[in-house]
Image (cartoon, rainbow, N blue to C red; front, side, top):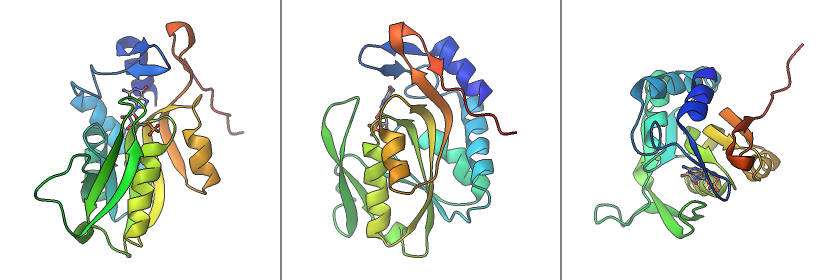
Length: 195
Ligand code: 5GP
């Protein structure tokens, strides 16, 4: 997605250890016009998948998921990362190790919002080692629901997340795929051209 690649190049900052900072438009301040375009793109890619629910993880997954869910006419459900007094019983939980925070958190979704008839589109801001996506897949499966696919805003293709998810048989649609962040420079993966 060209608009997204442009935002990454113009506004992103490469940090040590293969981390990309995009606080100007995705992880802190949010570019709403860009989020709408991202949502449309996800919705377009999954329009034939009969999605009944979009599932993400708080907080950075919510903005790019919102418009996708709106376009797909499906509710948006976000997993909580922090324990809440309003969310203690009748929940599905899974442990997720955070690549950027370097800590494990327990993600939680109330059982009432997912059921075995649901066809779920999972969306997240980044794909690195695949831990967040695997945690979300775990809670969706606990509900007996189906994962129709995984939508990622920024995939770091030099980390093993995609490979793990593909090996497990999931469809992944990433809007930007980064091949390398070496020497502080962003290099995008060249997609194979269909002829
Ligand atoms: P994974 O679970 O695939 O290892 O990492 C994905 C999660 O870690 C995302 O939800 C995102 O919050 C965070 N993350 C991973 N890599 C980056 C990165 O380079 N930049 C930012 N801002 N977040 C990242």
